[in-house]
Image 1 (cartoon, chains in turn cyan, yellow):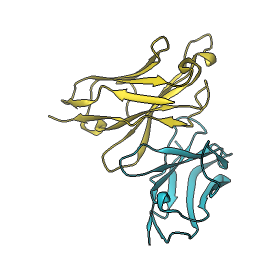
Image 2 (cartoon, chains in turn red, purple):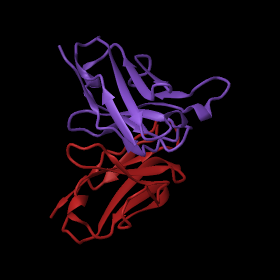
Image 3 (cartoon, rainbow over the protein chains, first blue to last red):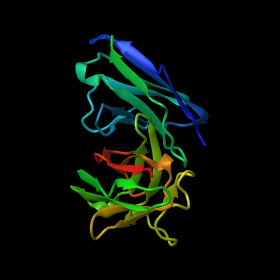
Image 4 (cartoon, each protein chain N blue to C red):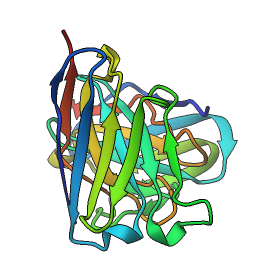
Length: 107
Length: 126
């Protein structure tokens, strides 16, 4: 099973600043990685798949990069609606697993 | 796209529940579907996936299960009713979670959850 880890656990950022979230896999794979955003009381929302492809309707300030074991989600200029928990998830092979999440909160 | 889960509730350990997910806004049969759960205050866990009709091989639909539910849960779909199901037997306290239904991006199980329902809560407790 591929174990996903995320860092930091919590990221405190001021509105308008850049946020960089990291995701690491215990085994190397290509780019079968997705990022999701979850706000309190809401279902997760797909942001990025294929490590770098934005899902439909996702603003350009969200970008993803990486391959192998190291992946990054960057939010170029944080808006108030971006404060949430972010999960990475691999879909390289079964079982598909999520990271524990990074909470982005207001500094 | 709209996904509406139902069937959750309070059940005793060892009991059973069947979750349903009514889908609309897309050609349901053409897409793989999944169940993902989230225990209270915890992260996400991929529970089970089932392929869509376009990916059916000679052996039928493909289905995957997390080790934590294998042998106890069964995923199925009724394409004529645009509905996904999760039959949950021998329930344990650790199955307590909000269960989300999710639509994949392909008929094959790719496991990119493009759309999610709002979830149905399952509580296993005596």
